[in-house]
Each structure stands twice: as C-alpha cells, then as structure tokens.
Length: 108
Image (cartoon, rainbow, N blue to C red; front, side, top):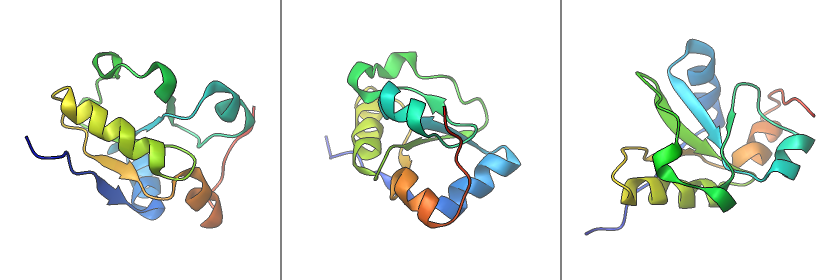
C-alpha cells in the first residue's frame, strides 16, 4: 500500500471553508495547548488519545486537521487514512500560520 498523501491547505482556504460551512476543522493539539489558544470553530481531538474511529462525522463538510505547526496534523491525517477514512487534508503551518496571517484566535 502506498504511503497516504496529505494535502496542504492554506490558512486562507481553511478560514474560507470555516466561514462558508464546507470545512470541519479538527485540532489535534493537547488540552493544555487548546486551553491556551484555539481557532474558533475547531473541534478538539488530541493526538495522544487519537482514535480514528471516534472522529466526528463531517457530513457533507471536508474534515481538515490542524495543530501547532503542521506536523501532528499530517500524522493524524495519515492515521485516519490508514484506518480507511478519506480525511486527506491538513492546514499547513497550523495555528502558528493562522496567527501569522492575522486571523483571530480565542483563549481559554
């Protein structure tokens, strides 16, 4: 079997998808990171307890993973694909790129 491929989406693409309801953003950072800062609308799903079978059903949305810098979100996408799920996208650069683009985050 070939190595699962993960598509890099830009923060602009993800922000547009969140705004128009076409993307379900799944944040795989840890609870302490999520408590400190998060992207509004993202769902918490920490990588340390990651179980692809428990991922939320995105319905007609595209499920996209995110993390701090883009490393763990690739890991999550590959794990989901290896479990037979079609979730092949992540937000390149993670929340660091999101903030660098000047997009809002919420704390606490």
